[in-house]
Image (cartoon, rainbow, N blue to C red; front, side, top):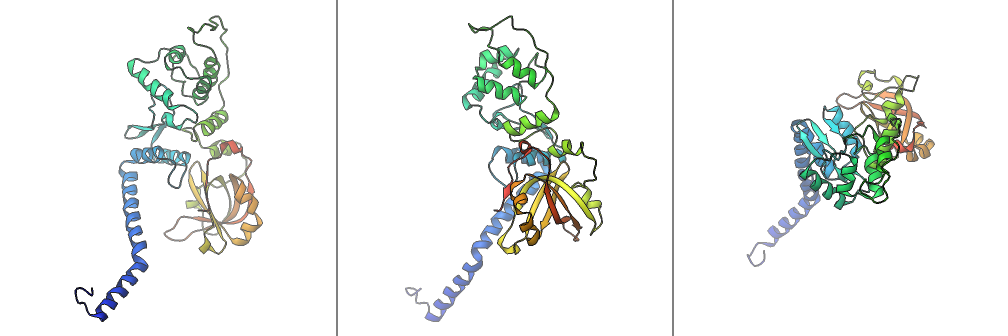
Length: 330
């Protein structure tokens, strides 16, 4: 500015203006960027929901919610979710039509990349005629056989009745193996229960296309438990009990020690508000338990989601095998 002979007082005003802009310019640019992402995400979820969920699943780890929460939300928005299948799946999760997602092999924890690629290549030549044909052509190791069988990925093959049957047959050597026993007796095995299938899905895939854990739990209860959906029909101030899977715990520095929890059930997500005193009283339960049963009063504010003002908490009698990774205290 000196070279251009700008007056000193003008230079000072320019510098002060730049300093003032610096106070809000940085957050403003981030706000604009976030607004664009938020708008694009909203548009996709409304107009192309299958592609929206597929993109989030294929780009994990990212975002606020686990893959299982995304799948449960997709189902609530009328998106069909299909499990991993050696007959149909690709490496990544894919949209098979406007209303259907098929999980990909990338979700299987322990399946090698070269096995996935060989499977896709062999399948492109011809369909697998049997489990023996699949094992002979794809050559998965014994751990991968068990993984595919337990996750239900072999269920679409001919002569496979269910997961436990697949697990039994996957232990047998291919018939062209020198040590294969061609006279092995056929075993009649019981199907896995819904609980066992859910446990296998969550431990091996990190998500399930089957029922939410809370649906299985609710069938066994004889007490009145509110659901996330029923909160919209309950009057303000009413005392209630609600239960679910913790998917998010938040205790921001600006909240004066209060805690916020997102509790998921088979119908959606409920918001819990835990005042500072209650948080300290139940701190161990809040920070360590994946499933909670909360007692409190419903708070309804116009234009906002219903919130449960928590009075007391206790652990839900649910196996940790049904838990998914929560988003905590970020």
